[in-house]
Image (cartoon, rainbow, N blue to C red; front, side, top):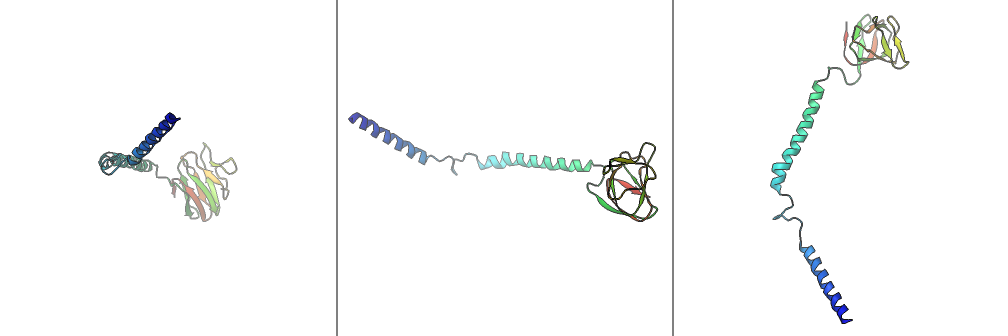
Length: 157
């Protein structure tokens, strides 16, 4: 029994010494840091800045390589009798007035709202999303003063 008490007392002393050692151990101090300030300033921050710079320059180059087409719909007022010719991929929505589709022998304007191809000389339906598939002289002629929403490149003649 005395042996057991001595063993438990010795274990208690060892445990207290271990807790005392752990309590005194500091994972990083000002005098002995885990990562030095010079490492952060001279190595880590330049890497982070270069990464940010490369990401930002990548964004700038993708914008400059665009075709100049509008990224969002623009409201355009077109006078009666004017002709609007659109490049490939231009999207048009007739909001007000009447207009006639200008198409070529290869086809007309794709009406994505109804799912049909609008042929040359047909009336443009109001509030339908029309897409110009090929920039070969397709567009529309304003029969009255019209207001359209356009996304993409176009020219008014």
